[in-house]
Amino acid sequence: MTSLLSHHWLIFAAAWYGINGILHDIFVLKQHQKGYDRDLLRLLMDGHVLILSGALMVVSWLMLQREVMWGNIIGAIVTFFMIVYVAMIFPFLKSFGTLLVSILVLLVCILRLIMI
Image (cartoon, rainbow, N blue to C red; front, side, top):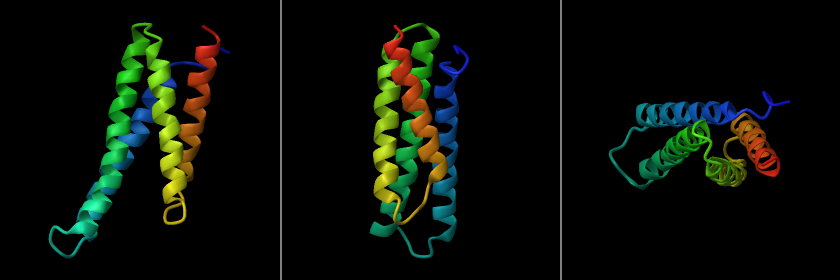
């Protein structure tokens, strides 16, 4: 049971968010034909939201490595807002993977907090 509630799920989510954010920005820059404009900025912000979330998840994971339980709270907050973010963009981009990872890590963080 402890392996299912491992804090290593947070580093998996961090990698998922970060890599997807970087790939998103790369593909946006490759496909954008015009110069720097409002549309490019809006599209790049989506990738940067993912990258920032990944960075915050790394911080949460490092906190849990040192047995600082605030890492669970930060991880739960980040994943909750990633679920909200995915729900907002769902009509345009069906991001099932990010939704699944976020729900899983949110549950892990909440269960770890309850078991303290």
